[in-house]
Length: 203
Ligand code: DAT
Image (cartoon, rainbow, N blue to C red; front, side):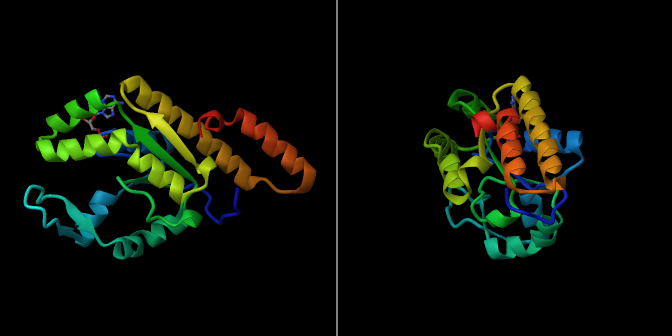
């Protein structure tokens, strides 16, 4: 794990629209006291999204990623951010400690997007995106493999267990950051921690 000045980790919760990112972030923020950084809200507040030119999808915003990063740079440096966004590869790996890709099977995703009032074309695009594992691949391409975790979110029990797992991971991350020393002992501890780490088997 790279050394960092952050005392709380920055965690990305990403995935296709409708998979349950915001639900997970909200619950996680409540349970841990970390800050729910809703990128949608940042985009609105700083007016850094341009309306799409696609006439069938006028509400989608094209976001200026450089300006977005400028807006959240201080938050990321401070740490303790739960980043809620349907893309992940724009956030610098040095600023990120864990990437959770939320997943949902297509039948349930269809119902959720329909309930949101999405049109057929937008529903189809998002369902394709989920089937093709676009966000999972994006996360794996942008970050170290061991930082990327896939989390199924199809029931309320899933939300609870996912939040519990991330909470445990945060505790162990904080413990690791406070640790000093080096060499063999550290290597042995790393090995033991990996076995205990609730994310380890699934990362
Ligand atoms: P996202 O932020 O990925 O767009 P969301 O958190 O707003 O998704 O969730 C979309 C809808 O699905 C919302 O009505 C809440 C519901 N939902 C999310 N996660 C769920 C889960 N694990 N079980 C049942 N419903 C869930």
